[in-house]
Amino acid sequence: MKTQTLIPTNILFNSQEQNDTLISKDSRSKLKNRIVLTATMLLLLLGASTVYFFQPDFSAFNESRMNSPVGFTFLAITIVLLLFKISFLLYNIYLYFQYKVIESVTDDLLPTCTVIVPAYNEGNLVFQTLMSIANSDFPKHKLQILAIDDGSKDDTWSWMKKAKEQLGDQIVVLQQPENKGKRHALYRGFNLGTGEIFVTIDSDSIIKSNTLRNLVSPFVTDQKCGAVAGNVRVLNNKNAILPKMLNVSFVMSFEFVRSVESQLGSVLCTPGALAAYRSSAVFKCLPEWINQTFMGAASDIGEDRAMTNMILKQGKKVLFQRNAIVLTDVPEKYQGLYKMFIRWGRSNVRENLAMAKYVFTNFKKESKVGTRLLFANQFLTLAMTYPFLLFMLYFIVVHPLLFLSSTLLGILIISSFPVLFYAKRYSASESLWAYAYSILFTFGLFWISPYAIATAGKSGWLTRELPQK
Image 1 (cartoon, rainbow, N blue to C red):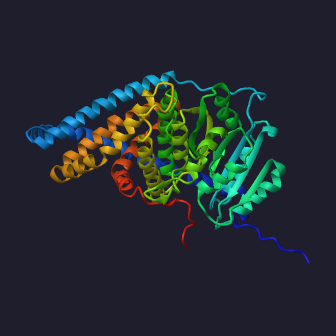
Image 2: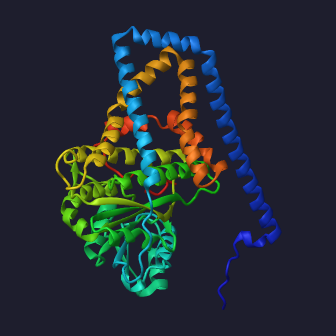
């Protein structure tokens, strides 16, 4: 008796119908994108033009602030901070043009490398991640791949075993007895790894064939290099609107900001999606890292930022490789986005406080000015979060139309820089998503930073649970 095989419904359609369906979905997606971008530009232009008509009201509002001791003090602080930010931006632009990637070294010079992939509730994406690593043009005899399932509740472990079946001795798959968090999964990998360099890759990320060799080459050319950050781009940015916005944002965050930080030898965060660490630097701080606490509780977030911070504290350089590209999955819905940002925000608060303890000490022999300048910029941003929030709420209550129009004009001016940057690097049409992202962040995510500061002691990954049925 033969076993009957069920035919998926979509196979019953002929190829023409399938093509028509795909074209229809693609057309709807493109139409929706055009509507969002058109509405964004119209809103910004309307806001900018409205400022002109409200000019007398702006003058009266500023005059009232000048006549108030509190208002005058706040205005003076704002002007000083604005001048600092403008000067800092100009300095960043200068450093960006000085940045150059380190070209890949030969196979003989490449160090041995252990790639660690922790996974929790990732499904078949982990399989794609592992296959992309195995297909790298990195010498196989120098590459060790460790995949660690952190007690997933879905079929992640099955996909890991499938990768093992296909890749054989190229990969070792391990399973945590229970979900203990990404930090503990990485800790197990660090202790089992044999490579001179540890590479960590998120289980929802795909690397290019030359990514690994480009990522680890700086360790060969610079013995003071302790860690390297990869270049993170968005994987699922074809149709969904939020990933399109984040893709433009990521290019600015990595290809501009981290290029600048790399010139100062002080990239402040090596991303979980793709990072490399010199094993000797990892083992120097591993006990402190795994036992890290904040406000008396074990730290179970921000493991990438914490590791970067501890390696910087050793006086090592942390660099960025623009040619080491990884494509990562990002949230497509608002809830997933704000949870991700809350986690990042809390980690930022914690690690800035940790950095404050050593950044003004003699923590390295080379110049410390660049590292201190980067820290000062971040610390000032955090310090002014609540004063600016209170001013914003006051402005909304007293002059809502003035607030709206001036904010839209500010977005149009400030966001033009990432728009021009992305347009120059990649695509002019896609660059307009920077405007849409700025509107979303200003009006829909402004609460993240003050909330993250207030709840910095809270733990929880927030973004890896299975959806409730």
